[in-house]
Amino acid sequence: MSDSQMDNLIVAILEGDSEESVSLAADLSRRGFTSKQIVIHGVEAAMSALDAKCTLEEFNLLEIMLAGRAVMEVVKFLHPAGTPMAGRKGTVVIATLEGDVHDLGKSILKMVLTGKGYHVVDCGKDCPMQKLIEVTEIELPLAIGISGLITPVIPLVKQVKDVLILRGLGRVKVMAGGAALKQSSSGNLNVDFVAESAFDSLRYLDEISGGVR
Amino acid sequence: MNSLERVAATIQFRETDRVPVIAQVFGHAAAVAGVALDDYVRDGETLARCQLNALKRYGYDSVFAVMDVHVETEAVGSVLRYRRNQYPVVERYALSRDGEWDTLALPDPQHSGRMPEMLKALGILRRELGDEVLVVGCVLGPFTLATQLLGLETALYLAIDDSPQLERLMDFATEIIIRFGLAQLWAGAHLPLVFDPSASPAVVPPKFFREFALPRLQRVFQAFSGAGAAANWLHIAGPSGAILPYYRKAGVDIANFDYAVSAAEARSQLPTTCLNGNIKSVAFIEGSPADIEAESVNLLRAFRDRGGFILSSGCEIPPESVPENVAALVTTARSLR
Image 1 (spheres, rainbow over the protein chains, first blue to last red):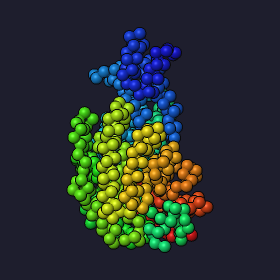
Image 2: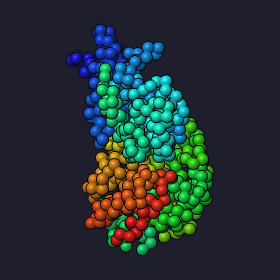
Image 3: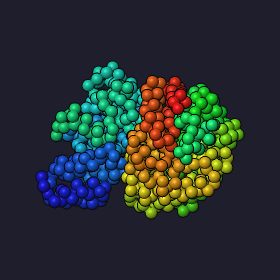
Image 4: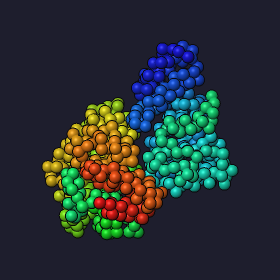
């Protein structure tokens, strides 16, 4: 789909201009584009462009947060409270585990995954294992994403897969990321995937979900 | 050659009896002493005793009076939650984006929060060690302190939405850092390490570092040099390769580099600056002494023809690290000449 206003929306999101992004999405909507079309050809296209830009060297939180804020505003405009956007690609449960109160990395993951069509259930920061498992039992997600900035959460991260298996949820994949966890390996953390960045998690999810729309 | 002389000679690329080794042992000193981290970060005397015990146990070249990254922000008014065996976390930041900033008062290092305890720790360490071992204090970098006063997310959005306001906050942070750093020097530190994780290219683009952080780091380091600091040491973890070229301009004498930057890249970006690094922090938890030894040997070889290198971890050696791994780092440096 080629439309100059859609292209402008992509640029506005990449520049982190929330106001302009929402205004362009509103125009597109008035011109008859469906919310799904705006998300797929505007929001998701912007996130793909950002992904391409965010090589390991160029990735920085500031740029991602700004684009992510614009994405969330557009999504909020297209799907106001009460009309939640169903994740077309599946559900992902995310958390930082008990003892870790840093949630910026998790918020970035939420913005990136939401922008690319996943339904994200956020268990919050400092999340007890019990809560994470209960939410997983209810949501039956494709995967759980655990973000960790500090090393003391590593022993807890190692338990997640085993607890899931015990509860009959062994098919739910476990992803780990964040400054502390990404220094480790999937074997050492007992998880299915260790992500270098939020986009790395996205690629893994697209792989296991088949990127189904 | 004692530790202080060894480090001083290394900074100037002079010959030494061996490569200095500085394990970034902060809370790990409490762990090996069987002391709760909560007590360690709140009591200067406990901190100093644990550091001295760890020095005796491992035999590296430096001790640190480092509590955690919240000392300054607590002194300004942030409310912390202390936890028994973990570093404290911020419950409520001192400042809010819509709050009144015109009446901000600079904290007094002799009275505010835990600053006096940190000064006490430095005094004990310097009294005990004199000029034998490098005694290191710690301040945050101006941008990192701004993020600690406001919260990282809020500070980052402020950088874009109202950069003059962020600059005002960073100027206030710079004043705190200089005041606290000078107090540390007067209390006995040979130098205050400037710890600036939020200025990492993982968080903000290099352009932001150049325009916002660099001029303020210059002021900080000028003030420390003027007060007789043994050297200016900047610690920015993560993929710092793109900002290393600015370090000389900032006045840095020792540049920390983390595992995300290779020894070759660090050397090429800072050919005439002393470097310290860069073994992964998590390797001290998950690795074996043989792993640490192998990493150390690789690093020592990478700098053998150049000098100006301090063997170290890339960031903090986590409190729960395996002591044998810390010992392996030190033993390797001490055994290779």
